[in-house]
Picture 1 (tube, rainbow, N blue to C red):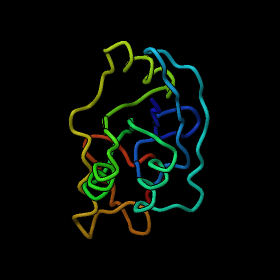
Picture 2 (tube, rainbow, N blue to C red):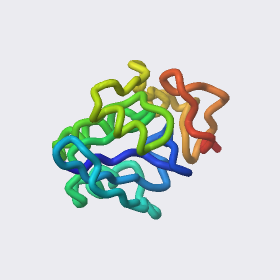
Picture 3 (tube, one colour):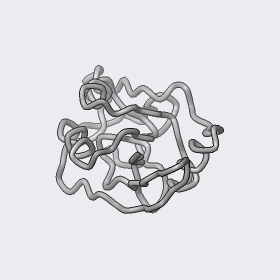
Picture 4 (cartoon, rainbow, N blue to C red):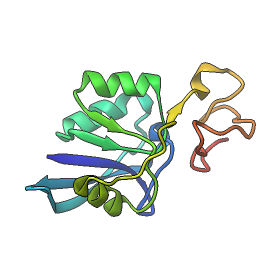
Length: 138
């Protein structure tokens, strides 16, 4: 099984659609057997699900994520575990051990409100589902 984690500087990146890369862990017999990085390059929100599906990822761990991305990942049969934070390897180890702590309110609503968006628009100092946009709000 492959588990991807939104990643920047070995920490869970808090905004799925703007993650610079994914830490990808191959798991066998409930143990990590390999770790690699998958760069997002210029890939935008819409293409990230395809990027993960193309890498045979089955589970995504992230901080926050919006409804469109959740739908795209569901269509690609990728399970989403949102609301995570901390070191990427540690969150995978915690998941495998059955005690990954997550923030249950991880859904980002900012794309639904034109005054609050991450990326090309201003965030106006808002918080997405109890977490920041990873410092990438412009």
